[in-house]
Length: 195
Ligand SMILES: [Zn+2]
Image (cartoon, rainbow, N blue to C red; front, top):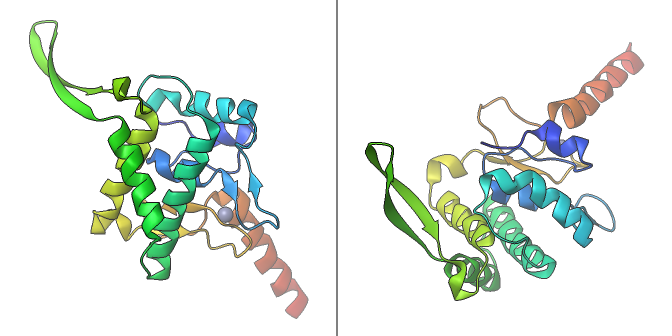
C-alpha cells in the first residue's frame, strides 16, 4: 500500500506517491528554487511526511532529521548522476551502504492460520533505523535494475526538480495536474500569441 500523490499534496508537499519511498524522499526538496526549499526541514514537517509514509515503512521511531537529510542527499546524487551519465560521489555510495547495513533484515517463517508464510524481520537492535535501511536498500535495488532505472525521469517542466519512475512511456510530468497543466497553459498562450 502506498500513499497517493493527493495525500501528499493535501499535506503541503510538492510531490509523492511514487512506488519507491526513496523517490518520495528525494522529492521533499525543491531544488529548482533559489535557495532550494526543504519541505522536511522542521521536526514537525518531517513527522508529518513520516506519518503519511508510515504505512509502507517498517515500524519504528521517526529517525533523526540529520540522518534523513543525509540519506536524501546521497540518494539524490546517485539518481542525478545516473541521469547525467556520470558516477556518483564515493561519499554518496558510502552513505547509502551505511544506512542499508545499519539495520539488517532476515526472513522468518510464521504460522498464519493453517499455513506457513514468510515474513521479513528488520533488526534495528544494531542501532540503525529500519525505515532508512529500507530506503537505502530500495535505492541499491533500483540502481541494479536496468529496466526500472530506464524509467527514471526528471519532470519535463524546466522549473521543476522532481524525479519519478515513469510507469508508462508517455509520463513526462511529476504531477500532471500541476506541471503538466502549467505546460498546457504555456503552449496555449504561445499559440494564441502567434495567431
Ligand atoms: Zn514537475
